[in-house]
Each structure stands twice: as C-alpha cells, then as structure tokens.
Image (cartoon, rainbow over all chains, first blue to last red; front, top):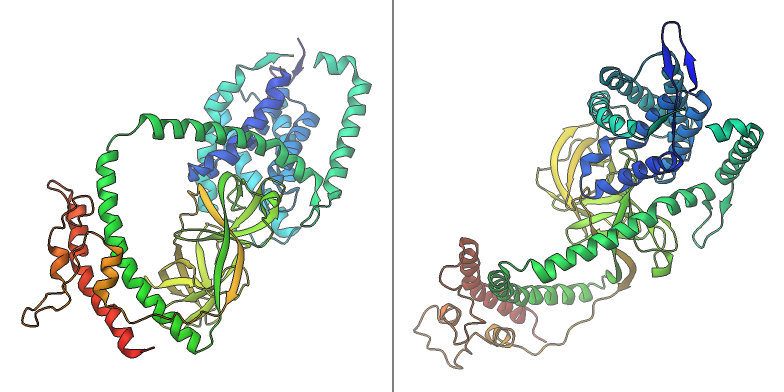
Length: 172
Length: 365
C-alpha cells in the first residue's frame, strides 16, 4: 500500500480503474450537455468540476490532478461557443489545488467534502470569469447571488456523487 | 498506478506526446466548407455528440412505441375536439385569406417587396453546451442537409437563434438570450427599432430605444429584418418590463415567445425569397359562396333571401347540419372548452361575411 504521511495522520492514496477514469468524466460531460434539454435548471450543476475535484482528491497527485482537470475542462470548452481554454484553465487550477489539499487534509467525510466543493466552485467561477474578462475580453458579468446558490447546490450534490464514486476507488 | 510506476519513462513520454498533441489540436484548424474549425473542438464534439445521437434515437423509438401503439387513451375524444377546432380554423382561414388578399393587392399597388420563407429544414435538438455562460444548442442537421452559418432558427411560436457553426451532420445554434447574440427588433405598436440582446441571467432585452418613448407592457416585439438573418415580422416575444436605462435609453425586458430552455424540435430557415406580391385576379364572390366551398356541412344559402328576415346570413351556421361529423356544434357532454369553441364558431360566419364583402366594394376588378 502506498501512502503519503502528513504531520499527524496517514492519508491514503487511491487509484481508479481505467473504465472509471475515462468513463466518469465522459458520463459527466454527456449528462451536462444532454439533461438540460429536458431539465433546464440542470445547468446550475457543474458535474465535470465535481468529477475533477473527486479524481484530484482521490489520487492526491498534483500532476495527475491538473492534467485531469485540464483535459475535462478542454472538452467542456469544446461544447461551448467560447474560446477553448476558459474551463480548461479554471479546472486545471482546481485540479492542482484539490489534489494538493487532499495530500494535507482528510477530505473523506461528508462535511469536509461539502465545504471543499463549495469553496472550489466559487474559486472555479472566479477564475473562469477572471480569464474570460481579462484575457478573452468576454462581456461576462459576475452574479454573486446566483453563484453562491449554485455553489451550495453543487456542494450538496457532490456528497452523494462522491460517495457513489468512492465505490470505484481502490487503495494504491 | 503500478503499471505507471513500473514504466515511468514510457509514462513521461506518453504524457509529453499527449501535451504536444493537445497543444497542436488547439492550434490546428481543420478547413471545412464553412470556415476552419479547431481540431480539439471537433474531437470534443465527436466524443460527446454521437452518444447523444444514440440516446435520442433510442428515446424517440421508445417514445413513439409508447405513444403510437400503447398509450391511446382519449384519442377518440381528442379527435372529436380536433375536428371541431378544424372547423373553427377553416372559418378563420376564410376570413384571413380575404384579409391577406386585400393586403397583397395593396402591397402590389405600392410596389412593396416582401420576404417569403420558401424553404425550411426541421431539426431535433440533441444537446446543449451545458453551461450558463454559453447558451447554445446542438441540432441534428448539418452541412449535409444544406445548413449554413447565419441561418435563422425558429419554432412556430417565435425565433430561437442563429446557426453559428456547421458540422457535417450537426450544427450549433446560438440562442437569442446569449450575451453575444444580437437581433434586429421592432416594437410592433410603437414602430420603434432596437437591438435584442441576451443578459448573463439568460433574459432578453431590447436596447437603444430612447427614454422619452412610451412603451407599454405586453407590446409584441417582432424581428425588424435589419440583421439580414431573420426575415422581417417574425415574433420575438412581448415586453414584460420597462425601466430607465443608462445614457438616455430604456431597458426593455422581453419575454421570448419561444420557450428557449425547453426546445425539442426547431426549424432552420434555409431559403428566403424576396418577391413582389402578385395581384390576385378574383371574380366577385359572395362570402356565403366561399363558406359553402370550405364548409360542406354548412347548407348553401338560398339565392334570393327574404329581406324582411334579419340575421338570415348567420342563421345557416347555427342550424345543425345533416352530417354529424362536420357539425360545428359539439356533441352532448362536450367540455367547456369545446363549448367556447362552439360559441366562436357560430359567430365567425357573420364576421366572415362582413370581411369578405368589404374589399369587393372597395376594389372592383
């Protein structure tokens, strides 16, 4: 068993099988693009972000975390009409930070997962808007109220999704 | 992970190649018939959209099987109701045909040119961007079906958006409530032109209307034709809120006529013709004759009505015709809605007579 050691506790590093590694992001991207046809409010969720956070935290490797986030973000970008890289950059940073956090803290319980997703969602949106407005000059406006509600909803949804994905984890 | 740690060098090599390939894909643009498209965008779409195609097909198959073969409850009742509605609409059509004929004659006299939607392609919505920052949908028709960028996309209720990217078998449609969208709009009663744009919250606003103009809530908004994408006169929506805006302009919020967040089928306007309406040569015809042509159930009016009987023109329609199938009178036990339809049906002949008689007197040909 491979594990990384922090100041007071052992943090387990997990691996995910290839079907889950490839399948979970694809399913998340597919649902993100397909479900809003019938349930418009579904766009408030960012399933690819939740998958990015889960993978990054489970693997606890900054490089794999940022790569996972980058790839998922780029595919998500390709489904929009905006320049490629907006979601890519945001999710790359979130992947890196989430895996770095996973090395230092225990993020296995529901409370910490809720809090972590809430904070990362807000950070993700902030980075996205900063890049979109600063680099691409997109005329996007921050809607803080909406963003807070979306962060809470994503954090709530993240808890059962992470629990579901836990079943696919194996100790490395 | 064991495999990766055992083949660390190979992993690094694969990673390095992967980054370079992705970097190339981002830079490389593949030439298509309708402009270059980034390779990575094509990959992303090819990855997601085929699955959407498959699911949509399976879902459509199951849905059709259920609706067409299993779930046939209330079909007979629905059929009766539709027949009644059909009769009412046919009466309405008679009246509208007369109005349209008059309008065409006037337009021809004034040498107006009108835009006519001559070809459309029906398409199914197969996906969305999945993002609140990019309000676009994917449809299952592309270059192979004659779709080109900047074609208008509509539904019977109103406009939806325009085609922005075309792939061989699918297209991207930018909805009118996206922030980067812009549509030439005309306030129908006030006859004021502005530009309809989307907001971050997915609403639509008409911009560039001066603050001293008086705009009422509920006023219809239609396309002005100024954007050269949407033909003039297509419904956009209705004004729901008017507030003072920045720089002496009004903020006019419009509720789109089309339900933009619940679209399943749309029409792409593939051809618009500009033509001058022809004068329609018509022999003078009594309204009751037109009614007799369109409504076989309505008894033909006697050629010489008694002038001493008021309301003789409308009387035949209120008399139950011999054929029950074509009767405008609903059967016993019909719903209140059907009853309302009946009331309208009985009033229409009188209206139609009035409308059809007037143009003939004004434009004897």
